[in-house]
Image (cartoon, rainbow, N blue to C red; front, side):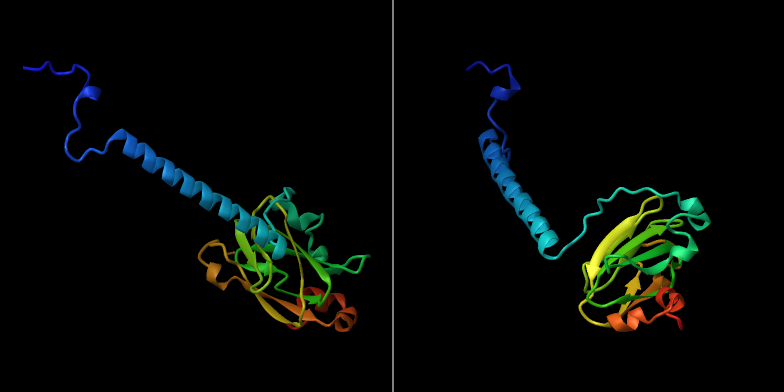
Length: 196
Ligand code: CUA
């Protein structure tokens, strides 16, 4: 009778066990496929962020969420839309359970607009449908996104990050108006839309 090999590695494979070479070959194929998919995804991310002007959440700018109302950039008198000396507009908003403050802002059309937001409590989301504006609003940090509105109109501004029981009701508006109309607005209309 032939002598049995002592190492289990040398024993013939039982039925149904795939040989090591086949496993290695298959794994290499999957590895190649995964690498190709990863490269494709990277290309898509780079392309969409340049062509669509998407904003990766990259500006690490900290702020103290407990004292927003006491002073500094997000004090109540600074909220809403402000015109910069270069003609662009900056909109400052606070997201909190369950509203954006101010509840409505007006911005001029065909003007670079920079939104600066922070949260007073939990993580919220800030989205303007059909624009490149889409960011999370994290307490302790300032979220900054830039855009430019091509047409006048009204944009809904839903919170799109679950933030508690009232999340579904956390909506507000951005009203885009002609530049001449905007220039004629007083601070109350710019920061509160007057009637809203
Ligand atoms: Cu705020 Cu959801």
